Image (cartoon, rainbow, N blue to C red; front, side, top):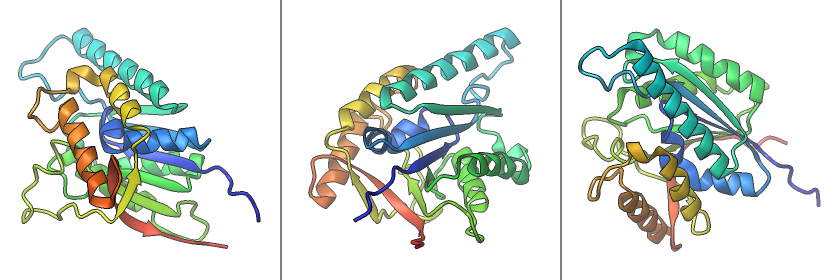
Length: 236
């Protein structure tokens, strides 16, 4: 029997911290198994946060802090490849979708991933929804396209806040046991501590742990991350 080769994995997200919230435990499983993982972040994550117009150097410092947090978080999960772009935060709808698609396509072409993780299409956050659309377009399964598995994750405080009848509901059909990597996920989130909120906010450490426990209990394990399978292709 031929040994299974290590996989090439890409996770494409709107903001630095989405990758950990959505699939941090799964990413740690991939790196522990020897898979090569790339994280691609598209938006700066900061520029929508200010009601006034702070000095440019202040905004650049905040963006730099978030980049540094993303690097430390990646290292905590064993992710060696991190690419951060600076599309405007929570304003991806002000840029042509084709522009976003082309950035994602360039990464897919360069990486040649077997598996891609990205946002759920029904999230309340506009950036999440547009990144989902861009990934779907960039991963259309033409002849010779590398992506075999396409998976969509949930993001606490975005996915569950979308009313079920306003958009497609998150109904997972793919679960990954993260019983042994949940603590790694939480440790990686510590590097994004300023993004976390007090309990009972869903984007709290307790909320993340409870969600993992519930997803795990749904499939008979201590902790899990849940996904929607967008596409699976099995080739010779």
